[in-house]
Image (cartoon, rainbow, N blue to C red; front, side, top):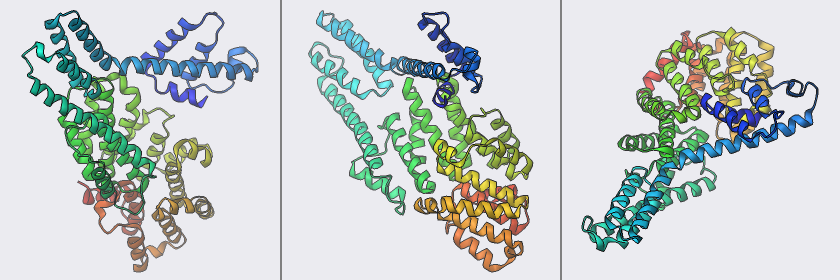
Amino acid sequence: MRDILDIIALLDPEQETAFVRYLEGLNRRSDTKNIALFKLLRKGQTRDLDLKLYGKANANALYVLANRLQHRLIDFVAAQSFSKETSADMNCLKLLLASRIFFEQKKFKLGFKTLKRALVAAEEIEAYSILNEIYQTYIQYAHLQDQLALKELLHRADHNRAQYLQELQVTTFYAQFRAQGMQDLGADLNQQFETAMDASQLRLDKNLSYKSLYQLLSLAVETAEQQQAFYQILGLTKNILELIKLKTGLQGRYALYRMRSLHLAALSLFRNKQLEACQEALDLLANDLKTYTSYRSLLSNKFNLLQSLTHFYSNRPFEAIALLEKQNNEDLHARLTLCMFHFHQGEFDQVAKLLRNLNHSDAWYEKKMGWSWVVQKNIIEILLLVERDKLDLVLLRLRAFKRRYKGLLQEKGQERVVAFLNIVDIYYQDPNSIKDQSFIKKVESELTRKNPLEEDIFVMSFYAWLKSKMTADSLYETTLALVRTHGN
């Protein structure tokens, strides 16, 4: 059922209604229960479904029905996506084919008029492969018109061919970079990208399509996430964001590439504590979501999460919390972020309540959300036990965490997480140690970077917890002070 619920979560209310109509059109018998199952799942009901549908236990029939419903959902999503995302391309191709028919029928004036429409439409969506076909047609019939001289046509065709090849180079670069295992953990990420782009003869300029910009930025962000090296892609992020601002008027799936790129740029800027620049990117994304409403279901959760984080670290905690509380309870990123918000506010009872609702095993969450999410959850749980002075439980959880994740964290180059929890252990067993110079030096040497500008905002937030204990200031004020000092 989890796969079906994941698909349903992608549908907005209009699409849900359309899907019911889609099922009604396919159902040949009146007793088909696929619509009833869909409506139950849409309401979040997942228990005793066979009893509700058949009036008795019938796991086999439910399995078959759920399997068929999943296939119908996939077909529906694919059909909608194809209709929506290929319409611009199809329009260009229809105009191109129409122009060729007119030329064959010796309707040359009408042929060139239609071909020009195809050219303008294809340029708007950066459809370089279609533009190749359009220019070939122009050149084939160039001797019949004077509007575009053959020399100019050849020049424009060569320029488009170069752009097409550049887009192909980006796709090849993306595939090769990923195939190499996201590169070495110790190497400078920015230098890796520059070297790889030089080797691929790629240039970061306005000729890159939205798709290419998105591929480059998604690869950079994914690698930076793995290596905790967002500072190293800050320059690349800012350059791509400036190129995005220069590009306007794209439609269909090209708009989706733009919006996904804006989200990734905002995420990278946020992790670098560049809150004003992050908000600027989020404002651009918000405007696009208003224009391209069909993509809201894909991006609204991600947008709201990042907007709430920006509010929170900009000293607007109540706005941040209110925004996330409206989020779907199935959004586990939002749930864990809410825990962090309330923890910073000292609202430990609320944190405990939220954590109790995350009642699956770590193995289950690791499979669904990844190890990084589970590590963050464990750290919040341990710090909550420290704040509530649960000595035996703190020691038990620390030992269990190290046993399960120490090796993985070292393998991922995340030794500072282990060092942080070791220091938490020292502090909790001897709170007075926090005043010792040796303890302070240990914190600074093992947990902080030489250049605080390179520090990730989330890592800085955990360090702020220890610093607040040293200074006896509130955690939230300490966190904001660190972000302001080493951010914008």
